[in-house]
Image (tube, rainbow, N blue to C red; front, side, top):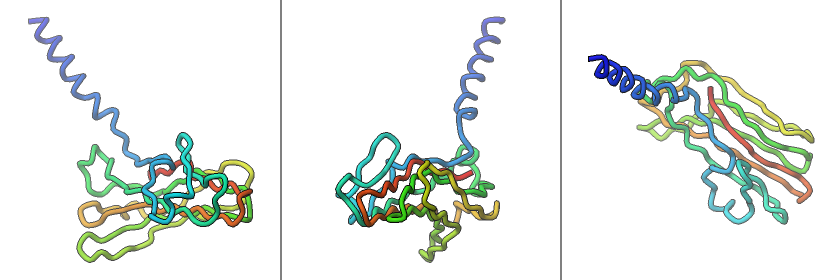
Length: 166
């Protein structure tokens, strides 16, 4: 009887591990973005980072579908309030923007929820924008983050390292 009880307890604990491992937040590294067709040949990916290839200028547009990770995906309305972006913008010859969009599943109406715009800084930056905790409704909408890197000179180091929503 003791062995059966111990096995039952062990099985229950093992079954609970995926629930403990589930994050309530959404995150992606920059290198995992879905690139716009016109951005396919002017970028490079290094580890988690998406950036311009050494000889390229112009625009890189990458989109990151937001998936519902809240409560192991069992709730359609996570109480998320903040979009975070980690990036490098070390020159006035370039910029980085990260914009969170909502798309209505029935009408295809696209709504901008918040936007982060870079400022020139030699160091990696972590910036955020906020929105209401009742914003997300995965039952009726889909979501994505669009990141746009621009540069007009190859000396500008525009990079996206990571995105998260919590």
